[in-house]
Image (cartoon, rainbow, N blue to C red; front, side):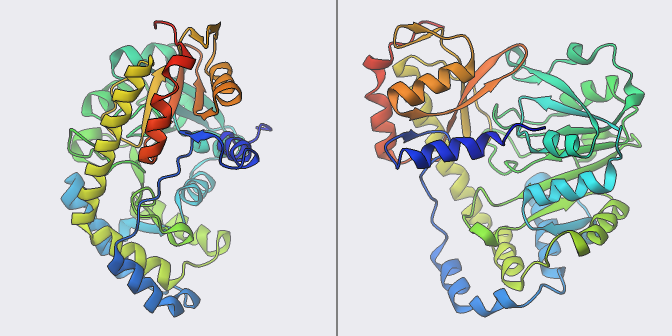
Length: 376
């Protein structure tokens, strides 16, 4: 895993152009924190110097969020706050995987888990998502693999970048062919940003039924509340696994501050704000989709998340392209437009971020004549 992290490279390219590029890769719109929360953080800045020695209020707020938004009832001792999503994945991988274990990941998906598992010397296999079936898993892509070789199935629902959502049907298909897996992990960072359905959770009883497989899920509000370094995520799973990760965290990362924990507890309890942000992104999605279609892209349906993905057009600016990487480089170098490329063994995609400003959308629309995108 010697290649550098894709998003770090994109950020470097954006910094090098000093704001001249139209950024639909990372995004520039920043959602403001509620004024009451900003005031509370300023008034309680001294809490940043105090470790969070107890987490009862946080775990109660997280449990209530799972109950009210996901219809999942889980005891608070099965919830563990973590300093961000990647730290949570790192701890999970360290505590659950051994070198040589098999790991199944969806593709495309957020690449962090696969990278972490590879560094743990696990054997990582891909389960392709099928764009012709609303990005449901293509079970045929793992046919012939010994299911007993898979210890962890790492899911990413709602999926980044496709926006596909988790369903009982998807879980049934996965369990049918990988039933020997011992642990199911789901990165549900975008779970609350589900536009036309109730948010789905791997922890819901309808997902894995009476299977003996263990379910662990990652949740975060970092995409909804820009708390920066104060952002806190949480893991939810079995009491034994949460205890193991908690013990690991005692030496793996510095203690959370009381400010971090209490600020995130505030966010977890703010159900009105959560719905407002979801409505905001739904509106951002619709505006972006209309613009993309108008200039010649063909976006896929997006039921969740903060991204819209498109098929790679056959040409850009009258020049043919064959991969997402090639298309993204041309858009950046010749049209000052930054997007994220996603190439899989069977399909290629361009990812547009919904975190944009109104003027960004106007500038994007103005590119139509220059882009001259070919029919898809």
